[in-house]
Structure formats: C-alpha cells, structure tokens
Amino acid sequence: MKAIVHTKYGSPDVLRLTDVEKPSPRADEVLVKVAAAAVNQADNHLLSGTMRFSTGLLKPKHQILGSDIAGRVEAVGTNVKQFQVGDAVFGDLSGHRRGGFAEYVTAPESALALKPVNISFADAAAVPMTAVTALQGLRDKGHIRPEQQVLINGASGGVGTFAVQIAKALGSEVTAVVSTRKMDMVCSIGADYIIDYTKEDFTQTGEQYDLIFDTVGNRSVAEYKRALQPQGRFVTTAFLPSLVIQGPWLSLTEGKKMHNMMAKPNQKDLDVMRDLLETNQVTPIIDSCYPLSDVPEALRYLGEGHAKGKAIITMSASSAGE
Image 1 (cartoon, one colour):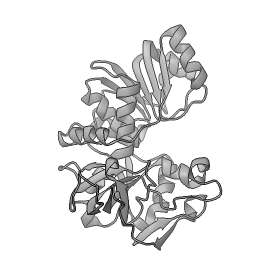
Image 2 (image 1 turned 135 degrees about the vertical axis):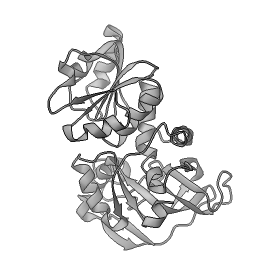
Image 3 (image 1 turned 180 degrees about the horizontal axis):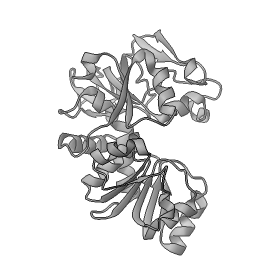
Image 4 (image 1 turned 90 degrees about the vertical axis):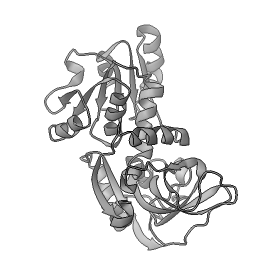
C-alpha cells in the first residue's frame, strides 16, 4: 500500500510517498481502508521532533503520521464487538501509533465511532481531534452554560471553528477573534460578534467574558485575566507555562479559573460529536483538500497559520465524498 513515511525528524521535506506492507489487525483492532485523513498542527510538532522524548529520541518509532481518519472497515480482529466489515467509521488515532497518512490503517475499536450518516468521509476526517478538543475545553474545563458570554480566540482554525459552533449549540453568545479576511466565515458558522485582531485587541476593549477559549496563546496571563468576568474561566490549548503556578493562585485570590488543557481522545465524545453533526448543529469547515502525495504541502500550508478550518487528505475523489 502507499503511505507517507518519515524515517527522521525535520521539515515536511523529509516525508516520502512509498510502498509499505499493508497492516493486519490484532484481536482488538479493526483494519480501515482510509478514505480521508486530516492534517493537524500536532503532525508538524511530531515531524519536527519537539516531542521526541515520547516518540523516539534519535528517530521516530512510528514512521507514518496522521491521527484523524475516516474510512470503511476492511477487516476485524477476533475480539472486536462494535464494528463489522463495511461499516463507515471515523476516529482519532493519536493514542494508538497514528498511521492515518496511508491507504490502510489498523486501530483499536475504542478509537473509532460510526461515521455521521449525513456527511462525507472528508468532512468526517476533519472532526475527531479538533472537535473533541473544542468540546472538552468548553464543557469540561470551561464549564460552559447557556447564555454565557464566550470569547473564542483563534476562532477560524480547526479547533476554533468547532468551538464557535459547539458554544452556540450549548446556548452561549459567542464573540470570535479572527483576522479581517476570515470574518465572513466565522459569521456564517454562528458567531454573534466578531473582533478583527488586526484592528482591535480584545484584552484592551474593557469588555469581560464569562469564558475565554483560546487556541493561540498570543497574550500574557495578565492580559487574558483582564478580559475575564469575576469568577470567569479561561482555557487554552496553547500551553502557557506560567499558568502552572499562576492558575492556582488566581483561583484562590481572585476566583478566576485559568487552565492549560490537553484533549483526551475517547469514543464517547466522538459519539457526542456525531449527534451534533447529524442534527446539523455543527458543520466541519474545510479549507482545502490534497491527495496523499501532497501531505508535505498540506503540512506546510497548515504551519503558515492561514487555513480557514481544516486541511484534508483524500485518497480519491470518489471515496472521500461517499
């Protein structure tokens, strides 16, 4: 089968399209014929070696990147109970060797869920990592409630576009922080108010929010704190080291809860997202699609920070659209 492989750390230039052995599922795994996969910033971090203490000190232990996939079950292991051959599935393989930038991949059944019936494989591949990150950040860390004033900083990216829609689905009023050229897009997905960061700094306006969900990490803790209501919450997916110490202190002294977060992939939250997708409360936003051979180009584009929503890898035009 064809796969995008990296045998050393570096830029997207080290990636190669090559033939590798088709995997076979273990007893608790399924074999998926991949129809589409998504590129994430995590792929660039893994590729560059910034996480090498967990991925291999001198060279990558797992040579095929790609966490978010959608496709059809090709074969099942002897202990698999939830899926059968032919099922359309989607999932996040970040906790299970990854391997999505390939024509086939194996995964534990716990990493997958049935694909929403009303969206394409390409749309489904856009969902797992980024949508679940947004869901957990808003719901679990942010304790979002109906009618709250919620600000999404970085609202036009993969996580941000889902965060805007999930916050609206949960009954909040949403302010989206984006650049000028992305204002129309975030308006189309339900943002109530828009701040153009090229013209205005949301931490300097005097407005305060019940919840700030941040995907950028481009302000200091003091600046974010200033934009929070008393008893407000701040959650960031962009790790802020100073929050490790300042977060507990601010909670104790000012009542403002400020958290770094890292999503935890799980099947239950994939099912939550499937329900939101099937009821049309959430729609994946896809910036662009690339063939498997162009994974390096897709990663470069994503790394530039200009994508509106997600960049998707499709194995073929027909399979991605099923």
